Image (cartoon, rainbow, N blue to C red; front, side, top):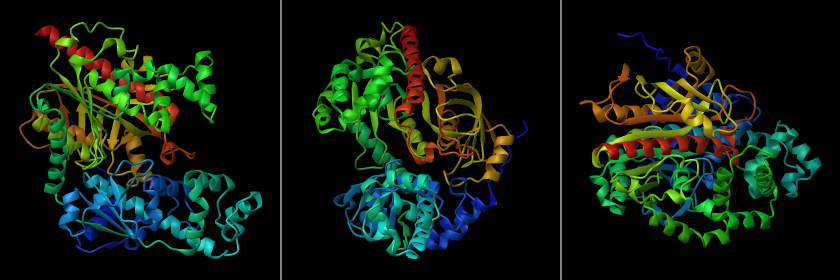
Length: 570
């Protein structure tokens, strides 16, 4: 038996926090978040290092703001359930008749009743491990602002609803933050900044949360309903070979469809007429070769911006018609948890439309393919296990499983790509050792700004808040530098796809001689041990396209090569 590659080192403080809120959530009534504030602060979370401080921890506050719907400051009760039916059975009613609300940096289907109740559809236990700490951190930090602002009722910003240089300085001093941090908060809240300041001064939040049904059966039922929605779009998915990809809803589609590249003139005209000239200057610099950015990646980014405009809305139908003509069907998960999918029929793929970085190979026999790519918008945590298990149970033969996602890095910088071959999973306490289908050579030719690090060791954590410096230090000393939330659950599902039993617990697991191709790619969006600002409180924006498309190109090129070889053998 090989010595463990990492000891099981779950922090006692984190374990206490988990035990506390799960024991409370067993109640059929609402749980007051104030009962969790002390144990939340006591775990010394890396994301909420200033929880016990009297001054606001603005990074933790902004992180929470971006991952909760903007109506959260009007909400009192957050109700969690796995499906629309769960809410109906609980007597809450048809939540789809409520206002659908979203967060900027977290995909979770939520509905607001317009009063004090927010209903959230959850896909797995990981959603609980995300929502509860987010709400608690938000309440702790809002409470600090409330206390400090209530001591200064005559601030000009609160009295006159104006914020010039002088009143900005007074406000920042009153709440013990820097002007730079105040500006960050104003940027995040936008036009709601001053109304929210007034609300913080007069109101202290008192959230309560209720879990309607925490059974594994209900998660499985919700996942099966999600799958049936896919089957309705293309019933033949049950008996056709499938390449499963967990990535996003845009990169693979853009690379295959070529819609943005074929509409280059339209997009450039949009840039020229836009009030914001920064993107136009970036495009001109790319054309003049003053910056090394990919023009294809840039056009994909501009297409996303363009489609969000009134002018771009008219092109949505044309884009979907084009995608369907080359075998791409989008599957909306509107009535289920928020994981959209696309089904791609490889036989209908058009080489002339593909991104030029794919077309350096001969795919002359692709038209003979009977295989599909099932691409899903990456789920959160244990939702990955539920989804891949469902797909493996009901789809045709699985030819490949490829996972692309964001992670934090302890040894790299934002924009780097990590390729692990060892993953320690905090959910099962298993350490998985496997052969990754990808190496640095598969990604590096397409990555402009970052570095590709292969032969890495990753750790799958239970939640973004559920880690502290001591905990991370143990893993770092053992060489674990890639921190994320989905690899472990996916590997547990992979184990069950070729072994005759459920995945083990607390073991070293060798995944050898898999009957399908398997690849795992992560790109860094956070540096949690850094003292500087990181993307945990913002988004990857345009420069995030670089690692996103570098990894997507590696996956798509791998699938097309594997399929060409498979057809040639028949």
